[in-house]
Length: 296
Length: 272
Image (tube, rainbow over all chains, first blue to last red; front, side):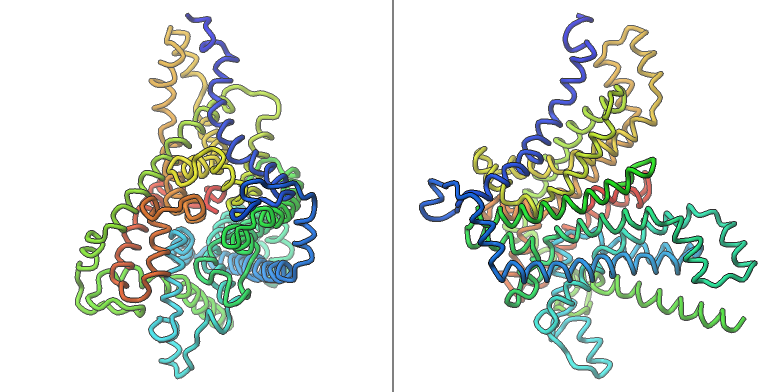
């Protein structure tokens, strides 16, 4: 028995790897490739093409690329990612880790509240924000009223800005944790010497902190860009509206594929999203190849 | 000296404002469920447990909770079994390019995240006859999370010395005895972490059950809460808030467990 298949080295390797590789293969890798095929059919959830989908070549892509609502979605997504991830989460995360450097109590306090915002499930945070921003009874408008300012229907008046702020609130914890950990890796003596020499804070940032943080900084930027680019949570707050004001690409895909039942068309948008993801990931890959470990 | 004091005062004021910004929307979640006059503003009134009572009288709330448990436990089992077997191989048998393979799979799982692949995942579940079933939801969520779980588990396993296993095999244990009696107890912590993280991510997942399930009876709590506030509107604030709190607690407890084992900074890859 000792020499049976299960006790041979290659037997064990194969048996142990099979379950994971089947799941990954079927539910991760196959869908990505199938998406390319679907994007070239007129597959639909309604009507004749639901029964007999036909190959239509690149006509879905032509439709997508000539549709003004796609460009609206692209622009909305670009603003959303730029403002909420790159400026908001990374900027605020950096600022918070700088300001709480070697202030243990304050760092823990800010991290705990930021992490809380980060871990509460999507459908709950969505409702918390709907309650928080409610025009008549919400806490935020109550505060404004207390200060003598006008109550505002934020989701209606400033929809995109509202989901940008929401997403900064939601995701800053990750950047702050990453930067804080990286700061702690900088030998304290570097900054102490700089302090003794009376170096300005800008020089300290430029010459000591930033060079030591560069790789963490770019890893963080690519990851949060990738995640924000693919986030579906704003749907729970606005469903893409009012009108198309918050129709980021994930919502645009959902509405086309599952509310208008245009699977082929939805797949074509998804392929475009997938390709953008691929570009972002290759940038990340190139950067992380330069360092020894892989931080994900 | 004065200048430093002023700047550090500004610093603290700024930090307090930011902390308030993070906590303000959350306070409601911890106050309203105990209020006798629940509303969208924060007011406790006379503390009461009545709202929790109304949760237990709402059939949709109860079975959704059960559905969430089924889905989260299913994902946890699938992930722990598949990922720990694979991670063991990657940790113990060094073949060329295995680190690279794991890295590529993690990147892949980030690129083909829920939203970019929702269309083919939906069609796939139709083709496999898994649409509107727990199994479809479980396998779809597990498939997306396994690469990261393998990566985290592998680094746990790498820290366990090989010599225990070798000694057991030399002493005449069979391979499975060695795994279950020697290796498994040693790797308990890592497996608890992966189990907790996959449970939490399945528990909170909204998109996958939202697109794959079509009958109310099968909805997990994430989808039911969304339906509560989009369909029922205002009258049931007490019920919704109590339900939301009950639904959130396992997540907070889970993160406290993970934090106790290895701190908060590690699991960025799996939360997303």
